[in-house]
Image (cartoon, rainbow, N blue to C red; front, top):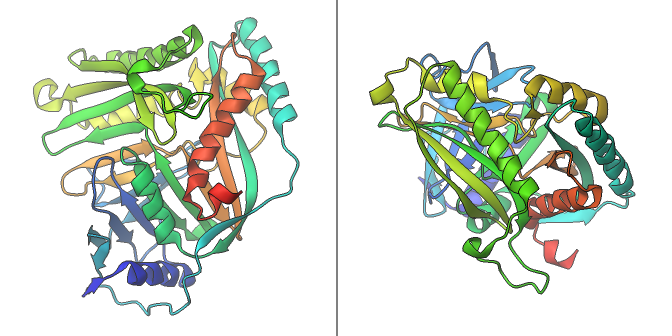
Length: 383
């Protein structure tokens, strides 16, 4: 039986009602979406070992305090906005589908607090305590009105064709995470080609007059270029640690991600040539957290974040994605995401702070990033 959009919506509501963990996702550049459901919910694993794990979905917080994995007891793949659920025995929820709207919060802006934290970090960096620290913030943007999660997911798929779009339900915390991340952490395809990327530097894809900026015409500051180069050098140093020197470097190139522009460089390794056992698992352990979400040097940046940031990132800037699905694995940094918990909606964003950072500009960058994910709501243009 092929389920239509309405049936998929009701299936999602049924899974939420029965507190069954699931991951709905669509890979970059693809049209089909996937729904994974487990009878056992998320399992804690000791290591994300690509060689040992079955087919499933990884969902890991930033601090890696626990490594969560969703075994794909059921795995459904879409066909033209419908999905074959004939093998799945679940009582379909009959609730009305009531849209996906945001009721804005009246909470005060944390702009001054964030800018003070940026200023504090800039002084630390000028004193050579680190080279770069990625300072993030969480913002309660309002409460959710409605339950049309699938349409919100589809909307992000249309506006973020080159992103990993996901909707993940984590029953242990009663949290729903919806996002569209552009950043590959670890990818391994059927041909045993490994890929990771350096993605850093952010600006609006539109000029002050609202006209779209072509990626080829984007101008980048020295600070932004150096910030992206730091991530690239970190990746190369990780490869040097395991004595892998045969790789392709593609970039840097300006790319569009939703309403934003970024600088991106790919690092590609043909593992049939280097023949490195379990390369993807080894690189995953070395890479996370990268300078794009933490800073450099890693230990010094983490110490400053503990002192300054002041909140638990949870799954924001952790990683997520399918492992061992059709002989491929795709893990992404969990960016451009929102958390829905007890009906309250939280967005997240961060920016790379260096000794040259300007607090006002850093604040505005986080606002741009948060605005991207808010596009999932039906009424966002009216807010």
